[in-house]
Length: 304
Image 1 (cartoon, rainbow, N blue to C red):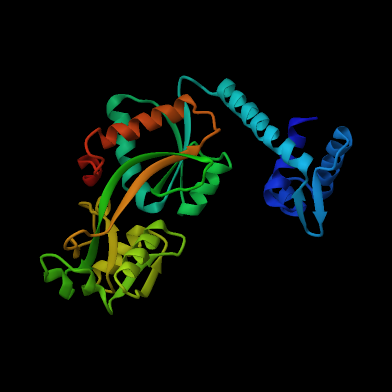
Image 2: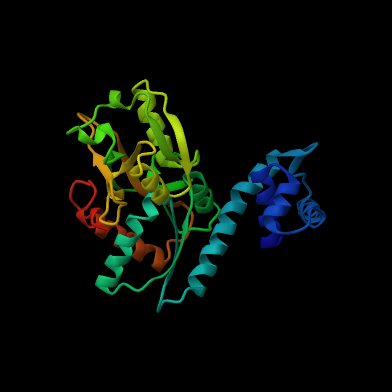
């Protein structure tokens, strides 16, 4: 029994399909299928129920899967620990766009100020993609909007921040001291795409207040959302941390009256993933930026 055979076996178990598993493992399907057959011959038991294009684990397959996950995780952790360069520890971090732009710079600034040396690779992507990459072992940490309910994830809450209405300076709502949720009826919204956790928060807030948002512009980047909003093309809702000195001219942020919408930001990692020195140092820096107070958004991030 070889480690690569266990990886192929787990890929089939998780994808429920030989073709998809082969693509994930970067091998041809015949090669992968042959290794699964070799594994079954060695164990003397069928590991999969082959039901056309879809396959499912047999009872013996389930038994092997539970052990194989731990074996593969242990191999990956030991390999990573041995290969890691302790003079400049590496960490791979992913973040959703509305966090990557504002929180990551604050963490990196803290590292520079304190002399914390990290070999950082970063990925900006939408919520589900960051979680998937974290579960696949591509990332040490994922910075996302909570909640994250997958039992395979370890969650470290960081801070809670309010969401604010953003409008152009000439927009009628810009003249109000505070805005009500009811003021958003019949407004044109500017948002990120459907994969954005911020967009999901906005839709949740609108739904809670019986508002059907009319989407005028769907943007990939927060910067584009800000530009269109400042030009008066519509309204949007952004986290407090998105408010910076570099905002487009004419962009106005307004607080919601009463208990307005908020979001909780946190870090997630795979429960079984080895917490390397680089990952530990990054987590310490992130928590230091937030501080030990009341977990509201820290001043260091507001000024980024």
